Structures are given as structure tokens and as C-alpha cells.
Image (cartoon, rainbow, N blue to C red; front, top):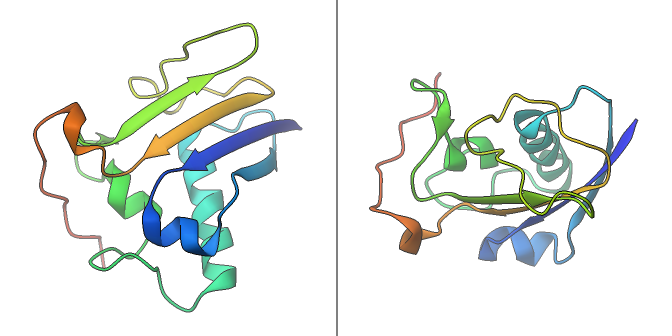
Length: 121
């Protein structure tokens, strides 16, 4: 098992979860597993996803057809010994223990805004 700290910088989510998420996940967990776990935690706290127009954090940040993060999503990950982990380009790579991740679903200043694909039924 490994410890993962993730800060999600999104106003509506921060109202429900004002602190960072501290997760204990299996050793093979990757960035996409972390997002799914946060979605599970959100569903246990609220009846519907709190951000209008979306049904999950994953639908806010992940392009389901092209299997990549949307361009406006900011993602940064680091550990005490590795100041930069490229989770954006390799979101399926297992994360190291004691990683800290900062996820900004709508960091529009990073690039042009990309239209989000509708969720699969």
C-alpha cells in the first residue's frame, strides 16, 4: 500500500472537501485510479456531482475518446526526492509512494479551452 496526497483546486469540490485528499491505495495505483477513488468519495458524501455540467471529476479532466487529460487541466505531481513526475503524459504509470498531486480541472490559463466530451451513457 502507498500513501497519496492530492489537492483538487476546484471551488465547488473544495466546499465539500476543504482539505487535501489523503489516500491509501494499492502499489499499482496510477493517476486515473486516484481520480476514480476521489469520485467514489464524492459519491458517498453527496447525491450528485457538485459541479454543474459534469457527472464526475473524471468527466471534468479526462477525454474519454482520446484517453488523455483535457488541455485546460493542470496536473503536477512530486515526491520529496523527485520534484517533477510527468503524470499528464503517462497517467497509467504506477505512482510512487508518498506522492503529492495538484489537480486543477479548469486551469484555463495553461492553454486554449477545450470542449469537454459528453459522458458515456
